Length: 140
Image 1: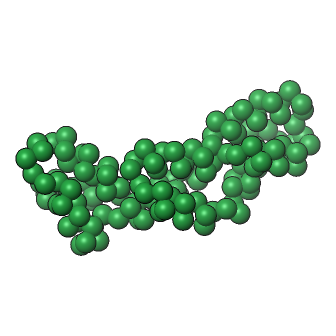
Image 2: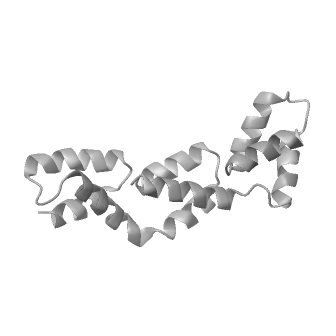
């Protein structure tokens, strides 16, 4: 089981809950997988903080907003306190990220009909209403 966990962690970062789920699929519940992952955590081989940083970096490169990232991290089993701390560090960058995405999609002024389309797309990417409206109003 340890070799399997090392192999998984050698490929990419995992959240603790995600690692528990992955190991549980391979081994039966006869093993105490949660205490095993806790030992890995003590050895600093698995870390929710490191996983969150890595996940956040990859999603920002994809131009995804804070709401979508928060939902995905919750689904992966990362505690809300860690998610909130990571997203708080990016507070000033969300509008810039949304503006950068909009610029890549449509250069120049955006018409009213296009604003509706880009509003929906940005909200679906996980940006808040305020962030989207600020970006769309700046592009007029």
